[in-house]
Image (tube, rainbow, N blue to C red):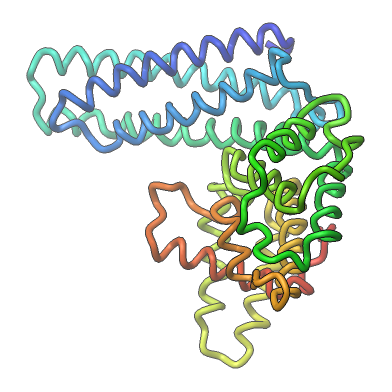
Length: 337
C-alpha cells in the first residue's frame, strides 16, 4: 500500500466506512435511551477522523501539491501502518456498531446488556484516538509546510507584518479586506512558489495578519497538540500558581523543558509566533495590543485542549500561560533544541 494509488483507495474506503459507522452510531444514540456515553465519543472521534482523512486525500490524489522536501518528513511506513490500523479498527467497529443496531431493533436494551459491551467500546475508542493523532500530525506537517515552503514564505509574511505593522493600531484585532485576504491566501497556497514571489505591495498589514490567523485556525489541532496539552499545562501551571519569590524562574525553567518536549515542527512554529507576539507587545503603547490582547487574537490556535473539555477556567488558564511565555520571550530562543 506504499504507492499513491493504493493509499488513495485506502483513504476512500476508510471515508466510506467511517460514514457508514457514523450513520449507524447516530441511529443507535438517537433510539437507544441507555446507550453508553462512549458511543457518542466514538461517533465524535469517527467524524473527526473523517475530516482529517478528507484533507489528507487532497494531498494523496494530487489536488493539493506537496514537494518531496515536505512529504519526506512523513515516512511511507508511517502512512502504511496508520492506514492499515484504521482499516482494521473500522472493520471491527462496523461489525460492532451493526450488532448494536440489531439489538436496538429487538427492543431488549437494558443497562446490564450495555455494561457488557462498554469495555470493548472503550478499547476501540482508545485506538481511534491514537489513529486520529497520527493522521492529524501528518496533515499538520503537510499543511504547515505547504504554506511555508521551508522558512521562506513565513519569513516573508512575518517580516512584512513586523516591518509595516508594529505601530499600527489594533493589528491582529481588526480584519483585513476580505477580497484581498483571500487573494493573498490563494497566492501562498499556489504551487510552485507558494507566494514567495508574490508582491505584498497591494496589501495592508491587516490583510497579511488576517492570512496568518486564517492559516492557524485551519490547522486540525492547536500548535501544542491535544496529545501534549495536558502534560504541558500540568507542568507549567503549578509553578505559576506558587507563592514563592522565585516562582517566575521556576516557571520559566519548566516551560523550557516543556517546549523542548514538543515535536520539532510544533516547537519551531510555536517559538516563531511567540517571537512575533513579543515584538508587537513591546510596541503596545502605539498599537494598543498588549500581550493579553495579542494572545486572545491567536487563541485557541496555540494552546488548547479538545473543545469538549474546555470550560471557562481552562480557557483562562491557557491564556495566562501563553501570555506568561510571550512576556518572557527572551528566555525562549528560536531554534532552541
